[in-house]
Image (cartoon, helix red, strand yellow):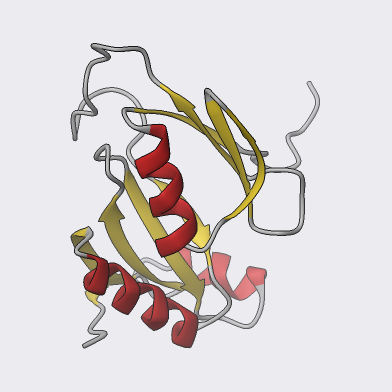
Length: 149
């Protein structure tokens, strides 16, 4: 079997395409790569698209936290300064916040998009991927609250 290289992109069905497009671009900083009447393709600026939003059909069931399906998806930022910037932007926008966690190898903020999809923005706390993996595997590693205020 071929070994996967990376997760390529994420596609979400959304209740209100215009509202979700505004949230992901104006608040989270994604760029529009292509916009169509029933979908918006978003990029972080390096590849054709990282995230796509499609208009869900009328009467689609809402996202239900803790049920089957997506728990959350994660988006990496450069460093703790960028993470604090996103955190403050989310708070100022009135976004629904979940938690802030220092995982040791990463610092993370968790919040919800307009449809209730949980999102993590994070930055690495180690200089190399191997250091991060070693820290994650450490039996002594404990998650702590990340204070950004």
